Length: 159
Image (cartoon, rainbow, N blue to C red; front, side):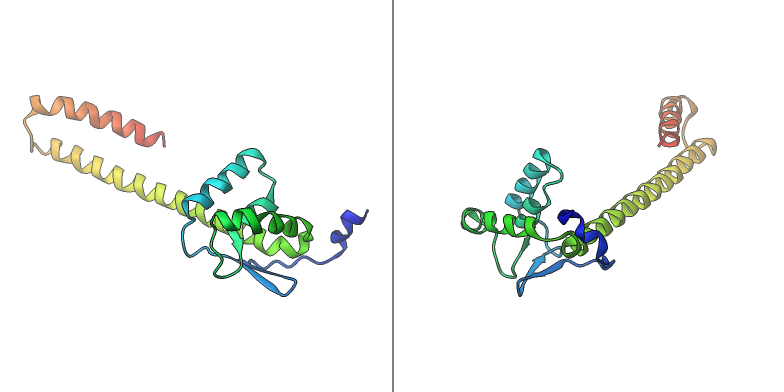
């Protein structure tokens, strides 16, 4: 029952890339890409256990100016992992919401990009078909490219 006490507390709906714990501010720097070591370590944690949020937060959520290097990994990361594991869900929820919002934006961008790419490709195929019909090329030389265009059109329609 002690573990379920957070259900009675209201959860904030805001999305933040920072968290304040014991008077210290921890930040997720989303303006710069992850360094190679950070990416590899987060991927390793995700491959081992997708629900190990304390380990993920200990890698990407650090004090301003802290560098993720071997010294941080050896000395500070285990303490941070323990600190994040002890935090209640209500305190960490704004950071989780931050990642959920980024995920939704990413999916929307990918879908929008795919639709634009499909429209542009369809336009190019239509222009090529129209140029063949208008007699721009010799008919005997256009048979093979037209067959390829028809295959491309079918593949495009299957996307």
